[in-house]
Image 1 (cartoon, helix red, strand yellow):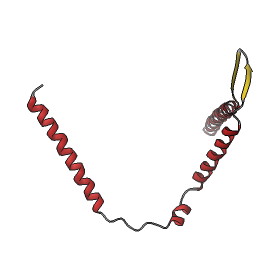
Image 2 (cartoon, one colour):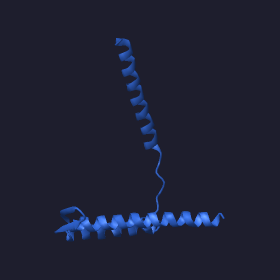
Image 3 (cartoon, one colour):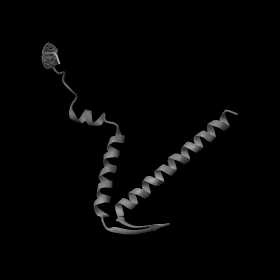
Image 4 (cartoon, one colour):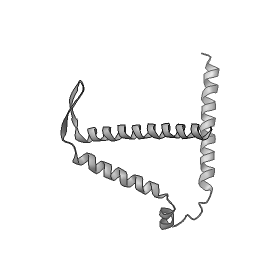
Length: 115
């Protein structure tokens, strides 16, 4: 490699780093506007996030309380797995079946509406 090209490359990197630092300093100098009080910010949050957090807490409690092993025999499968994993797998498969049924129903309704 040509030493001058390497030197130019490192100069460009240095200049880019300095420019980023200048931009960062410019943003730091901008005064921050007064934000809403905490209670107003909490009220402005969409309720579905609270429901999601509650569902996550319930799920964690469920997992921690169902750690016993369960013996499963299905067709040619014969295995042991934690009970919470079996139940979560069952819920996931049910969710997939429901989504597929909804999609099929939407397509069927769309095709009958277009006739």
